[in-house]
Length: 370
Image (cartoon, rainbow, N blue to C red):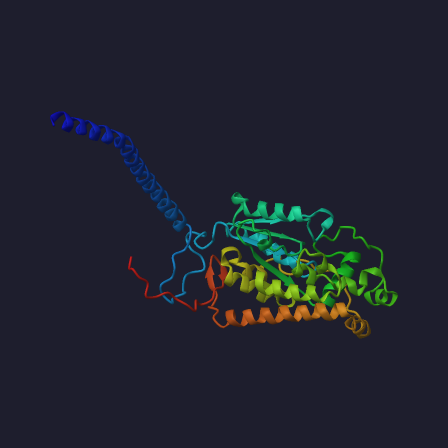
């Protein structure tokens, strides 16, 4: 009986030894996981704290009487803010960019001009990918405003997991834009008066050009603002394409932060300052008092006759461009009415005036309490 009991004990001991090593391994693994999870939580908290230091605290009251200038000029600006101004030619964009270049140093953001080969308004598919990839990862140049004469690019189409930009733009009455372009080709402007223009020496008026049906004044040349908002699709650039008009409207509503009109540039600049002070704080003062306001004026521009205008207005292209223009004007005026209804009196700082509006929302009943 003794030998039998001793044998059972040896068997149990041998069985227990086979369990020891796996149990030890499991225990070590559990402690390792707990250790690294604790370290990971510490890193996440550290990262959260660092990010929190770079963004403004949420307002818990309805007060919006914050001064337009803070001791730290970066108090509101998101580090990765990206604004794209895909400028429509001859809409006053040079005047606006003169203000932007004056503001970039004092408001602590960067400005880059996009120059395309042969002044093309569209990009190849591969260049669109490179463009998106570069500007969204150009961290040392963020916050960034990039501008150029290029058609709208839809970042969502590429699914590159990149930050989305804020698009801004301005458009102009279609006939006025074409007339300005026509005389610019012949006489230039006061921005660079000594540059030799492509049609220099050709003194034919716009009326005479229409009568002769020459290339520079053909109604197809009106087809520019719609394709700039429609985008990179080839159908966007087919004059009179109804789909392009509707796509341009959708993009304006869905993808543009603000679209102004040349005829109300002062309002456009003021709304940019109020709604996007990160970059445009002080823009209205510069527009009203600086030497960059209305910087570019085309020489020898004369208005066409009523007969010429009536002839242009009979074309399908003008009618569609005009419809898009008035669509943009309606959208802009709706935004303006809401903002101007709550605008605060301009505040003076360092002999300059700054504009902001009253905040119309606040946060309450926040739980748990901090």
